[in-house]
Length: 322
Ligand SMILES: Nc1ncnc2c1ncn2[C@@H]1O[C@H](COP(=O)(O)OP(=O)(O)O)[C@@H](O)[C@H]1O
Ligand SMILES: [Mg+2]
Image (cartoon, rainbow, N blue to C red):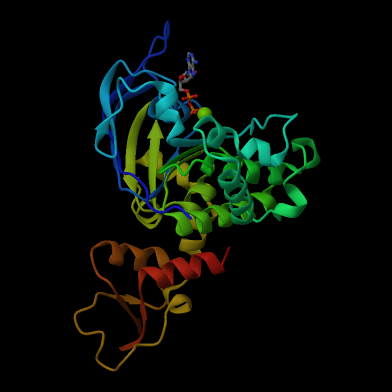
């Protein structure tokens, strides 16, 4: 299908709503790599939705620059801008009197694709979000579960082959089990398409589960920007530590022992030069060593090296304990 995603750059963005006594976005700068899945995380009111809406032109910043694929978007007509950007919100907003296929085809029709191309594309998208086209194509939104509606919402946002997808708490209204399935699906779709994705949530576990990079926000500012493992093991401020404290992953990191997550050494003597942790040390301590720049950590039992840990091992152990 489509491939690739655009880089997005924010430079010193300030947004203040009319009549508000403080800024909703207070000097945000961010550099997002093309093809990354970046999660904006923070409590209600910290400015996550405003930042997304600024990127797709629904909100105009008082100052600052936004560059999508290296081009500044100020001055681009909002309609034109939005056609190249997929947008998914919690209240899916499917048109109730249109079939699933018609809903997905809205933007392709706007931009003048022919019927055959739209039909092929619609079916391919339904397959991508794991809805059988023959069963779902002609249904109305009210004939779908909440999770299925969200899948159609994602398919619709991807219809015109955007290279940037913005998602604002898209899974906030579905129950916990469906939500986990949708998170896994989104990761799979992201890996298949490589679209740059910006995903807003206030759910720490959701952020840790799907993100390549997490942007932790507070009161209109970015307080930390890093990989999930980095944010987990090295919260930048007490605020970040407190925010993450409720997350299962943090508890798991502190409960799991390095000795339980390690793999056997690839060869005797392989551990020369690696940092060491004890098998009884928590995974958080092992992770902390890895974040210092080592690719591998040697895990000791007594005086002998018993195994090895890498980032992938830590990630796998966390997922397995979930
Ligand atoms: N349309 C609006 N008009 C005025 N103030 C708004 C509007 N939308 C959001 N705000 C305010 O801007 C701040 C950030 O809101 P928002 O971006 O919706 O945060 P979040 O998505 O993180 O919950 C909040 O103080 C909110 O009350
Ligand atoms: Mg919001």
